Image (cartoon, rainbow, N blue to C red; front, side):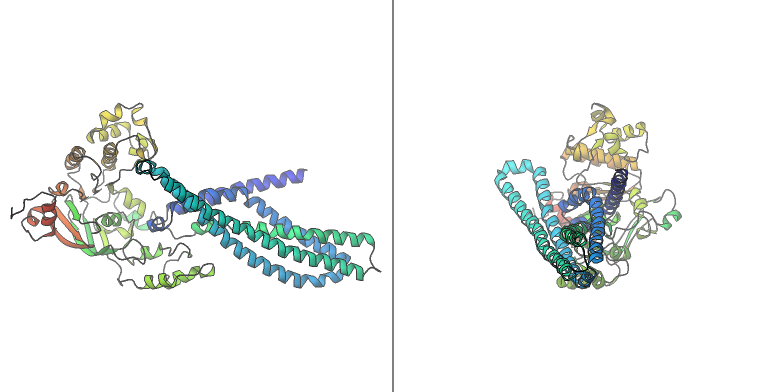
Length: 559
């Protein structure tokens, strides 16, 4: 009894420790993967890792490990008992072991693949249901609820079919192992009959009894072994983005960047390997405290510049772009220095590489490294991501708030005093509204900030940027989703509070960048114009003049 209690306590403790370790590794890996992974991986598949797979680790893994160990020991013990009674039976062990190994290898390979298919088919259910909940108001307004219900039913049917196929592999295994068990019973009985003159009845009965139980022990051992194959490890070993800190960080001044001087030097980038370049060999220089408006048509590469500054995407063909590339999700993660072909071929042990994918990756149209970005004379690719991103501020187009308090959204690292937070809110013209809320700074923000209007969320993001006190501020169409009055309020605050900072403004409304020091016009990922707005407006043939004319900021000279 004591032995049993100790065994299960040790197994439970080991299981909890192993599960916590795997979960922490998975979470750490997911949070440090490059954005290209999230662009190509459905959200439901990631949720599936943290739900079904972690549950399997909690519930199945400890007992599966114990079952494999006990099953193998039971099979070996049974063979020893049968062999001790009828030694000639041991001649059957080598061929039976070979057949058993073949069945085991074939079953485990098939079972793993079918289990993967089952997990992959379950992910779209989570994804579809999550999207349905997010857009339920639109679904009701369009009266398309039955279509979404039908889509959910179809995805559920696909998942159920995959699960049924996986379960059928167990029946397949059962039939083969029953046949092997029958051979073992036949051999034990046959050899016992042939040796009847030298064996007593008790030895024969013991051998036959153990032979009858060996089938169940084999089945249980193999099934439990297949349960040990988990998919968590697949994501743990994917290549992360660049490190959060590098040795070169210690050489930087404590208050870097000090002036906010930004240089793009022959910079090119793409969202991931195999895709076309979104920014192509651009070069321009932004002086300290200069206000630059970035304009261009949809797809010109405006937001890509923002992602490049924060190194959400890396320079094309650079060291970090290759080191963080994970290939197709179904291929093994590469290591730095691998060629594109070697990266794809790494996954061929378990998966079949797509020849078309290889051809696309090898057909990259930029052979050289895609240039660099310098801030205050420092190549940002030599700076750790944590140091870089903490010293840049952004007000995004979609103002993002997290579930928690107002204080946590303004100062997530709890580094500032309440007085600083209230001052920032006052400068963002939001102090009266926040102070009127129950709890003030302790007011609970709902998920995605749904209990605030879009304009209020934008002002909170503005206050957050004020608190960062960085020398570089990026406005990624920050006022695209707000009304004109809030837009003017934000622009007035920016002009007053950020007059000593370098500001890059991606313009949704041409009017918001008319007072910029310079205008950067992008067209198909290339720099078309980089001059002051006054100079560009004097050229009717310029791209900026045409954009301003379409926006009604200049009068048609022919009118």
